[in-house]
Structures are given as structure tokens and as C-alpha cells.
Length: 177
Image (tube, rainbow, N blue to C red; front, side, top):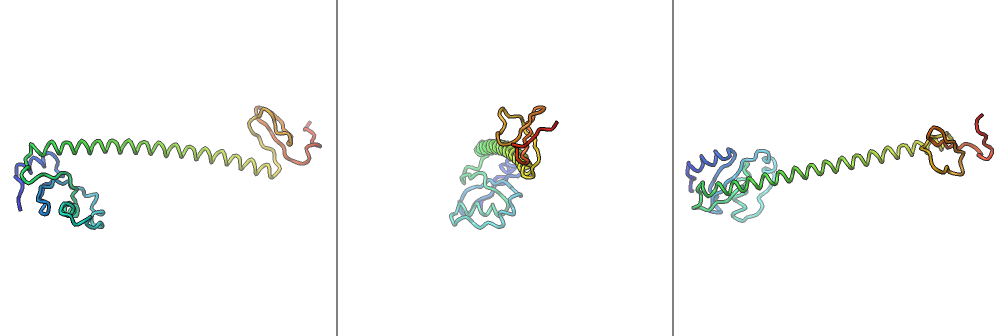
């Protein structure tokens, strides 16, 4: 089994301490992998994806806690070749992180909007239910003043509010003195 050049390994660790290089036996290529301990619990539960040599080699690193970053040909393991490719994957990773951050912000804004709508709906319906309950008990309620009051109830308009009375027979209603 081939071993990587110690100078290459030193450059790789200088670039990122979480990266490692290993020879993938089934694929006959170098794998550069990143250590991701937060995925260990998932890695232990999942089974191998398929029997292809590439997938089995990726799975081998996956079970050890590493995620595959880059595949390098058997005779191309030189820092001047690998470093630009690693840099491109890092840019893609940062761009993805930026997109994910923007998506999370949009989701939070949407959730806040939904919460505001629910709160507004709850408040309006609670007030309406309270008014209906008071009407059912025959009490007077105050509502914002309307242009034309409902005809079947006695209505008083004072101080910017409409007071609607639903008690008894309104044809016999006498306003208070």
C-alpha cells in the first residue's frame, strides 16, 4: 500500500488540521478526507451504500469519522496540484454556508410573520368571542363607532364608541334619563 509523501502531509495539515490523506485500496486513488466528529452517531447507524469500489472506500472513511473531500489520482499527489482543488472546495463550502445562512434567515422571518398573523387572529377572535358571550348574556358591549348602527338593536354612540344593547323588546326601550 502506497504512503503519502511526508512533505505533502505537512502541507495538508498546515492548510487544515482536520484533513487527512489515505490510499483508497479498492479505488486505487488518494482520498483527502475531513474529520467530522459531529457525524459519528449517524455513521455508526448507517449501512454501506452499495458495493461499488468507490462507495466502499468512501464508506470506510465515513465509519472512521471522516467525510470525503477530494479524490486524487495515484500519481497526482503533489501540493501544487491539490492545493487549488482544495481551495475551490473550500469556496464552495463557504458559499453553501452563506446560502444556508440566508435560507435560515428567510425561514425565521417567515416564522415570525406567521406568529404575528396567528397572534393577531387569536386576539381578534378572542375579542369577538368575548363580545358574543356578553351579547348572549344580554349585556352591553362597546365597539368602535360605525357609520350606520345595526337597526334591530338599541344603539348609543358616545366618546367614539358604539354601545349596542340587546336586552328585551327594544320597541319599548326608554333611554336613561
